[in-house]
Length: 417
Image (tube, rainbow, N blue to C red; front, side, top):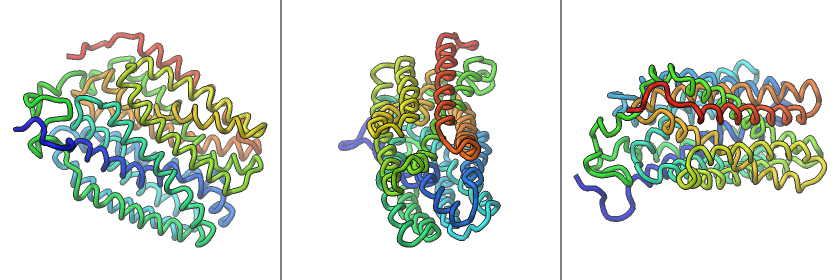
């Protein structure tokens, strides 16, 4: 078995494929939702809170799938990962296009459950597992590139969506975007994805030939059962819920907030697009930062950026300069929800039962996603402003920072060996 073949290591092809999945699947479902809030609610007479429940339904479905990620993708079932992703790629594209025929909240929610189920089978957990399989070195950089796809997707898709919305309406926009999703992700998964390096006679990037296929080399760390007996596991889950809830509420309500404080729909779409673009760069920078500065220091930097960034967003009505600084800081702070979670999980619990443990971490991530945007929308519906929601988000970030610092200071209950 060769260590590496000449040219670009195939691990970077896996990175590119996962990048496309994040760009045209995760971004469309989660990050572009905000562009549909006002057009859909105004057309159907639906409250913003009711429409934002789509995010909750998507997250509930993702939680259900993520809870069983260890059984779906782990152990001997890992060889079926590509087949599962192939079915899910077709399923999510068709399901997303079905939003075009929805006329009631119940129909929207049913479609969102399907979308969430299929998204969980192609996005965070399987992609992070693929990167873990294919990379021994530069894993942070690889994760950063993969997850920056959701931000790059915003830069590409937000202007397209806003233009289509004005020309053909929100229904046709959903249908067209479903077709775009299919054309982008299906070829990557069907033609390019390979689950393990040994399937191609390769070793992981930065790895040695002896490491390939040897369970002993990979079986370092805790099992899920052992992790459940470690307080750090529960502290991580709590912090993930708080951080993701805060970040998702900002991402999905940002376009509406900018519009509400006096800017045009086009400008609000531009700000949302700029936010996602900077978030893409932030994920790349944060991935490299984790490789160079380590887990603890990088996590603190991300959290502080999130705190000050969202704090400045509450001042956006006072001047456009606050929006600009917010965009930069939030790009780094929000990167923790994608790039850092897999890295922190491996740092704390190893790779022995990564699929099962990270699956539960992703359940917590989905809980935050499910409650974040509806809570922000409910605050707007009751207060007529998003400002109290931004204050709440700052508080959540501060509380999560404290939890994370205590978590990092604790020693594992079960030694990782």
